[in-house]
Image 1 (cartoon, rainbow, N blue to C red):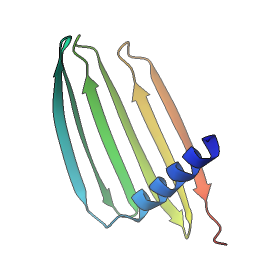
Image 2: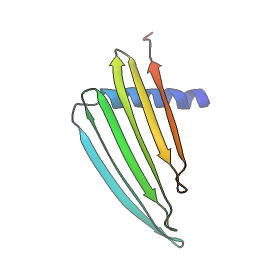
Image 3: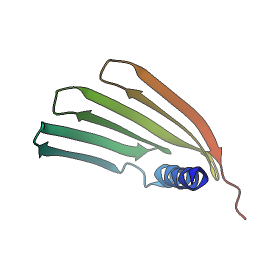
Length: 104
Protein backbone atom coordinates (compact mmCIF):
# COMPACT_ATOMS: atom_id res chain seq x y z
CA UNK A 1 0.00 0.00 0.00
CA UNK A 2 2.82 2.43 0.85
CA UNK A 3 4.44 1.69 -2.50
CA UNK A 4 1.21 2.52 -4.37
CA UNK A 5 0.86 5.80 -2.44
CA UNK A 6 4.48 6.67 -3.24
CA UNK A 7 3.90 5.93 -6.93
CA UNK A 8 0.84 8.18 -6.97
CA UNK A 9 2.79 10.92 -5.21
CA UNK A 10 5.64 10.68 -7.73
CA UNK A 11 3.18 10.78 -10.63
CA UNK A 12 1.45 13.81 -9.12
CA UNK A 13 4.76 15.61 -8.62
CA UNK A 14 5.84 14.92 -12.19
CA UNK A 15 2.48 16.17 -13.44
CA UNK A 16 2.82 19.24 -11.25
CA UNK A 17 6.28 20.01 -12.66
CA UNK A 18 5.05 19.47 -16.21
CA UNK A 19 2.06 21.79 -15.86
CA UNK A 20 1.81 24.62 -18.33
CA UNK A 21 3.84 27.73 -17.70
CA UNK A 22 2.26 30.56 -15.71
CA UNK A 23 -0.84 28.58 -14.80
CA UNK A 24 -2.19 29.96 -11.55
CA UNK A 25 -5.03 28.91 -9.29
CA UNK A 26 -6.64 29.80 -5.99
CA UNK A 27 -9.33 28.10 -3.97
CA UNK A 28 -11.11 28.73 -0.69
CA UNK A 29 -13.92 27.20 1.25
CA UNK A 30 -15.64 26.86 4.58
CA UNK A 31 -17.39 24.09 6.41
CA UNK A 32 -19.74 24.58 9.35
CA UNK A 33 -20.41 21.85 11.87
CA UNK A 34 -21.81 21.69 15.38
CA UNK A 35 -18.29 22.62 16.61
CA UNK A 36 -18.10 25.78 14.53
CA UNK A 37 -16.79 26.94 11.17
CA UNK A 38 -13.46 25.93 9.64
CA UNK A 39 -11.90 27.65 6.63
CA UNK A 40 -9.28 26.73 4.07
CA UNK A 41 -7.63 28.70 1.31
CA UNK A 42 -4.87 27.92 -1.10
CA UNK A 43 -3.10 29.18 -4.15
CA UNK A 44 -0.41 28.06 -6.52
CA UNK A 45 1.04 28.38 -9.95
CA UNK A 46 3.76 27.35 -12.35
CA UNK A 47 6.46 29.34 -14.11
CA UNK A 48 9.88 28.58 -15.58
CA UNK A 49 9.74 24.85 -14.76
CA UNK A 50 8.74 25.31 -11.14
CA UNK A 51 5.29 24.80 -9.64
CA UNK A 52 4.45 25.93 -6.12
CA UNK A 53 1.48 26.02 -3.80
CA UNK A 54 0.50 27.34 -0.40
CA UNK A 55 -2.47 26.31 1.75
CA UNK A 56 -3.79 27.63 5.07
CA UNK A 57 -6.42 25.89 7.18
CA UNK A 58 -8.07 27.43 10.25
CA UNK A 59 -10.12 25.18 12.49
CA UNK A 60 -13.33 25.98 14.31
CA UNK A 61 -11.38 26.71 17.50
CA UNK A 62 -9.22 29.28 15.68
CA UNK A 63 -5.99 27.27 15.44
CA UNK A 64 -4.39 27.36 12.00
CA UNK A 65 -1.79 25.44 10.02
CA UNK A 66 -0.05 26.25 6.74
CA UNK A 67 1.75 24.17 4.16
CA UNK A 68 3.77 25.45 1.24
CA UNK A 69 5.66 23.44 -1.32
CA UNK A 70 7.27 23.35 -4.72
CA UNK A 71 8.39 20.98 -7.47
CA UNK A 72 11.06 21.93 -10.00
CA UNK A 73 11.87 20.03 -13.17
CA UNK A 74 15.61 19.40 -13.15
CA UNK A 75 15.83 17.29 -16.30
CA UNK A 76 13.94 14.76 -18.38
CA UNK A 77 12.05 12.57 -15.92
CA UNK A 78 13.64 14.19 -12.86
CA UNK A 79 12.54 16.82 -10.39
CA UNK A 80 13.35 18.22 -6.99
CA UNK A 81 10.68 19.02 -4.45
CA UNK A 82 10.20 20.47 -1.01
CA UNK A 83 7.49 21.41 1.43
CA UNK A 84 7.19 23.10 4.80
CA UNK A 85 4.31 22.63 7.21
CA UNK A 86 3.78 24.96 10.16
CA UNK A 87 1.38 23.72 12.81
CA UNK A 88 -0.87 25.60 15.23
CA UNK A 89 1.87 25.85 17.87
CA UNK A 90 4.36 27.32 15.36
CA UNK A 91 6.37 24.11 15.02
CA UNK A 92 7.57 23.51 11.47
CA UNK A 93 8.52 20.41 9.51
CA UNK A 94 10.43 20.66 6.22
CA UNK A 95 10.89 17.83 3.75
CA UNK A 96 12.73 17.86 0.44
CA UNK A 97 14.24 15.50 -2.06
CA UNK A 98 14.47 14.54 -5.69
CA UNK A 99 12.76 11.99 -7.91
CA UNK A 100 13.99 10.30 -11.06
CA UNK A 101 11.78 8.11 -13.26
CA UNK A 102 13.26 5.72 -15.80
CA UNK A 103 10.81 4.70 -18.56
CA UNK A 104 10.37 0.98 -19.12
